[in-house]
Image (cartoon, rainbow, N blue to C red; front, side, top):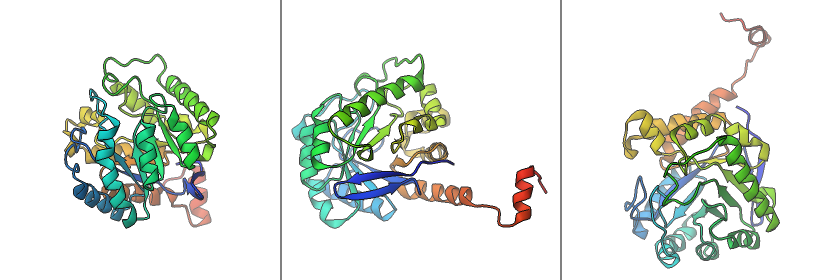
Length: 299
């Protein structure tokens, strides 16, 4: 496993990414998300779920008030705020865990930042509301830029690529350039190839198997594969039974150099990846073992 060590600057603090995998816990404060829509719509249940994921080892809690599942309709900013701000207000004093707002609207992001949120996760990469770049710069917080073809409403209507990797890389390069023009530095930008967002089944598999292609950006890499439909196509399981498949996809992502995994099941994924990382970090202890490995000798 080769993963670049990179810095992530959040206001006045700098974090090192790459020594281990980071985990972003998904908190959907929505009635219609594809996997857990409605389960955490009330502030009480949302806060309880957030604290549970933090106890399980989440480094970031990603709070969203608008579903981005395929075919979903946009939510007015006021409704989005009504869903997430009560949660953020009550959660922030209870934890030092990093909080992220999952939104495409600068108005929503600003209110969340004022309440103490640490990152902006924008699935549109600033295409829907370019003011979000200036906002991230003003508050000195990282901005996660994700690739998506079109909008959630239409993104899965016959998506097509001639050269999947290069087209997605070019999109991300354009959005990173836009972030730089707004004053964001490289340690304030995270990229996400957007698994499941305007992708065919084969595109998702190709992206996961070649995530190291995006290391040329020298930026932190985030992926979200948790419970997604390509796993269901392989296993035949509904979203709530896709944890084993999720772990398999997450392991491949880590082997290909990802820095942050966005997941629903923090404890289970974290424990599986921790075992894998410990195994990968092991090294021969004696000169004879090193010699055997070099010569390809098997006892």
